[in-house]
Image (cartoon, rainbow, N blue to C red):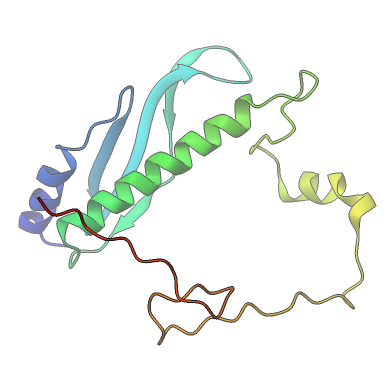
Length: 147
């Protein structure tokens, strides 16, 4: 990505706000990346430190709305992560996102299934805009209020 385009995207991102969050947009090896950061006590140590979300790649041909939608998705992902860390059942974080693949696999040992079961395919026709994927009925349409 060229520096001029990066600066345009950075100017758009600078207008996005959410309390307690910083949208960190940067250029690394010609690739535009954005991530969320915020200060919060670490859930394991209790030490207040800067927490970082994952990197989201921003394409140089995106318009401003695509960038803002990605920033919003980054925010939602971060909020869900924090909810999973702090959602307790009987004082334990049963939805905790910090598990290895092996730990997740071990915790589901009692739920092992045969591969004989297959989930039915969800029917969806992308050529039929406005249709509900789970029904043959058209999706309800909203009318705009006119004054």
